[in-house]
Amino acid sequence: MLSEAGQSSEFSPRQNAVLEQALRLLVDGGEKALTTSGVARAANCSKESLYKWFGDRDGLLSAMITYQASKVRTFERNGERLTGTSLHDHLVVFARDLLEVLAGDVSLALNRLAIGQSNRDGSKLGKLLLERGRRQIDRRASGLIDAGKRAGLLRFMDADEAYHTLYGLIVSDLHVRMLLGEPGLKDTSRQAERAVTAFLKLYGTEKVSAEAAATV
Image (cartoon, one colour):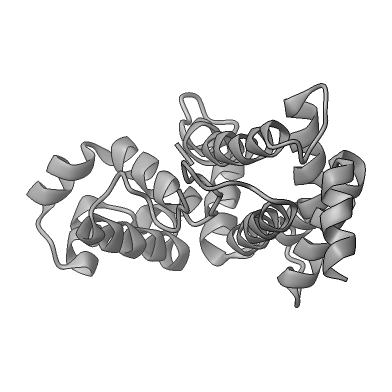
């Protein structure tokens, strides 16, 4: 289904608030701070509720990553006809959200923690980040690109290649540099606009070009 996902519909508002507190604990105190007792205190809820909602610690981590990934919005609304302008706008929202989430303290902390655990036997965080984070974002954004093709606005032979081109134009090596300690972008909107403009030049149809010319 096509919806604007600003917060995960998998969880209630109360559960989202708990997950936000759990993420803040992770950023402020690292992995050792992420205990059920600590989360329960920070979120003002019982440990029983945590177990009921999320299961064990791995379930909590999985939910945290799903919630974090839900902050990257994509167009997922049935019945709305995509135009060149609306496709452009939805892609820019996706690009800006992606940059802001990747540059945020939470995502940087999660990725650094996963890298630090990568040599441990049985480490699950890296897999969770891929399965519940990156792949969920990829799946939803690919749905937008597919919708653009069905509407005659995009042309490509390989959807995965088109999506990874978009991702590369948006992120480039920025995330790696930020993980190494460089500051993030001062203007994510400008980077998002440039990336989407370049993507539409590569994959947009004449229909997109005609709409863009008509709005100038």
